[in-house]
Structures are given as structure tokens and as C-alpha cells.
Amino acid sequence: MATTTPSHGNAMLTKLWKVETYSSGPLGIGDGVIYAPLLEGEKHYAALDVATGAPRWKTRGFGSLPPRFAAVVTEGAVVVQKYAQARPKVMMVVDRQSGQTLRDVRCAGPESDALDATSAHVYGPFRIGQLVVCVTYGPLAQALRDENRHAEPPPRGHVTASDPLTGKVAWDVELPEGMVTHNVLSDGERIFVGGRQTAAGTSDENQDWQGRLLALRGSDGKKLWESEPGPALNGAGDGVVLADMRGVRTRPQHTAAHDYAPNELVALDAATGAVRFRRTMLTGWTSFVADDRIICVDPHTDGAVALNSTTGAELWSMPSPHPAELRQPSATIHGRSFAACAGCVWITGSQGRMIGFDLATGAFHRTNVRGFTLASDGKRLFVGDAASLTAFGF
Image (cartoon, rainbow, N blue to C red):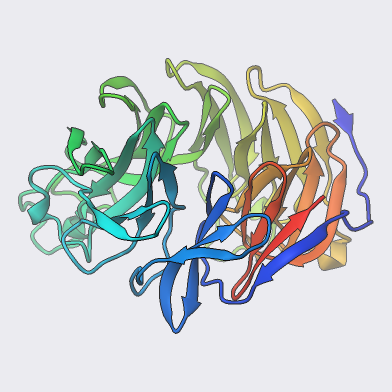
């Protein structure tokens, strides 16, 4: 194991262009174009040239809220999340060349009329080959809190794959009754649905619940395996999916890392569900897959550890790069955006600035760039903050 010391010099980033009307939300990239939500009088998606930032086209508005998932690019079409106030058709298909709206994507199964889009939760889109997959589930948690605890459970969630060009549903899988979805990931071949299993007629807060993780084959929706490592999915890639056995917080208010009980990071083989390794972490650590390794970042101090994605062996360790007086243990950032580019992994730091770690050595790169949404096309790094989108080269 190698332990590195922080480097206090700014990373060598070259600013390429900047758009001042960014409206927050994930960034989709494909074929030399970055797809970003913008705010110019109204909210809309724009296709921007990755090299210059020049707009190629803009779509109509995407609703009152920014999208939670990045646009995906397929042959001839781009699929974006729009949050329309309609039944759960909340994915919009636009032509890649012109930006013209083609159709909405159906995001639930045959009984989707029972799911009210204002309370249903939708994850996606995800691309599997030429199919677009989204996951929808109804307001089960709210139903469990209703006065009538023994009422019939609400409709089950669905995982639905469709052809964006024709609108035809290729397959639809109903999620198990009582499964509350926490998050969904894809590795380009499979869909991983993580959540917890609850029972109708019991309180969601008081009952003992069981973690549940389903892996579905993207081509036909066949269930490949099922596991019970925990409700949270942290990342997928390089043949591994990361799940999380959440620890229990010891007090309602937390001001230091030791206030969190240990939890367990579980790395499973994406094809079989077999456990590759387990590692005890502190609750709140962010873990993700970058190239052939797993990066784990402490949200309180920005310290980081790199693990071999097959064995879990520690490759390098970076202690907190911040002086003790600058650490902000209460400013925990969950679900950090990250991007791998130029041999480094870049993330949103706890100080609100982008920081980087060399993937090979763990050497730390501090920057003065503020941003919470990161993306990369392999050559350039795109950083979005509350009002602008900036492209950097190396």
C-alpha cells in the first residue's frame, strides 16, 4: 500500500469555454456534443459542441425541476428526463440532428395509469444497446404511513425498456411487491435496482426492513441474480457493482466523523452477484468505480482510498488534504458527482471546490474551480455550478 502526501499546487486546467445560462442537472455526452439543461427565459435542453460550447440546437422546456439523470444518446435520438406533469411519460425523445421532439417514452408497465406522476419516482433514462430503460415505482412509503395500515398496497414498480425511435416497449418487468427503490444503476449491459423490502400493514419507520438488490439483463429484462447486501448502490463498472450496508447514526446531531457507526461496502460481481470483497467504512463515504479501481472518499475530510476492483486490496491512501481548521465535518456532500479524465478522478470536494486524485498514485490536485456537476468525454472536463457550465482542457 502506498500512502501519499497532499500536493498544494493547482491542477493544470486550461479553460476552453463557458456558458453562463446553465440550469443545474446531470450532463450527457455523445459524438462530440454535450447535452445540458439551460435557463434562458425558460428551461430547455441544449446540444453544445464539446470543443467550442457553440449551441447546435435547443429543445422545448423540461418542466419545473431540473433533471436528475443525464441525457442518453442512441442512434438518431437523444432521450432526456423532462418532469412533465402528466402520467409517468416523463422521458422525452428528440432528434439528434435537429432537436425536434419526436415522442415521449413510456416509463411504466401496463397498469401505469394507477401511478400518479406527482408521487411516483422515476429513475432513468439508461441506455442498453439501442433500448432506453427507466424504472418507476409508486408511493409505497407514503402508503405505509397512512392511517389505514392494512389497505391494499399501491401498484408495484416497473422496469421498462423501449425503442426510442419507434416508442415500442421491448420488455417490462414488475418489481416485487413491497420493494421500495432507493437507486438504480447500469453498466451498459445490466440494470441494477437497489432498495429495501417492506411489508404492507407495518410502519416504514418502525419495522425491521431487509435490503434487496436485483440485477436484470438489459436485452430482455431477465433476472440474473438477487442479493441482500443493502439498499444503497454506489457505483457500477469494470464488472463490479458496489452496494452499501448502511451503518446506524449514534446521535440526531453529528459534528464529527466518529459520530457515524461503521457500515460495510460490498463489491459484487456484476454478472453473477457473487461477493468479491467487503470493507468496513464510515457511514457517508462515497464510493465509485473509475477505470479499473474503486475510489472511496471521506465526505468529512476529502481523504481518499483506492481499491483493486477485483480483490479489494488497497492501492493507495490519501489522508485529508485540508488543514484541520479548514475541515467541515458538517458539510457532508452525498452522491458526489465525479469524472475520470487525464489520468485523474475529479470530484466535488467538501469545501465546494473541485479536487482531483491521480488514479495511479493518489497525488492530490487542489483547484479553485467551484462546481457540483462533473462530466468528461475523455479529453475535456466539464464543470457545472449553480449558474454556469465551463469546459477545461489539459
